[in-house]
Image (cartoon, rainbow, N blue to C red; front, side, top):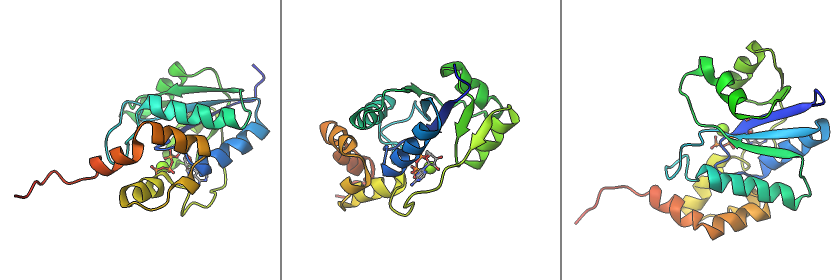
Length: 175
Ligand code: ATP
Ligand code: MG
């Protein structure tokens, strides 16, 4: 425990190049990083297609491919009760001192609980966003350049594009 351990939390649906850029910066500034996979219970839905385990694999593979090993990955389920959110996260994660988040609600909650909260710049946000990656998958546009190579391989292995397309289909069957 060095007093320089970070937490970053996101849904990572999927893990993309913007997340990778943030983590490169966090690894420069901190000794150890815990990556919380938020809304861990959700999968197979439009905004949340991938399971916590699949997202775990994407993140671990992408970071290992860049030579990082000083990280933990912890899935965290939603409580839907924000006053208890910090307790939920700390109960699941190894100890940390610094929280990296751009989400105003998350920043406020951790600051109220006494944590140091840092923001990171947004990298190419028009393209590097989970929403944009999922849109391109659904519409058949090129999405691979938006994610680390190992993430694209995991998505291929699990039939991710097919899943995103199918769960985006209407359930109106017309005869
Ligand atoms: P979605 O569009 O599904 O919400 P997202 O791209 O916002 O996906 P999240 O998992 O919701 O990804 O975000 C986790 C954290 O990563 C958030 O704090 C978010 O601000 C940050 N983040 C996301 N994209 C970028 C980016 N391009 N550059 C820097 N930070 C980013
Ligand atoms: Mg988001």
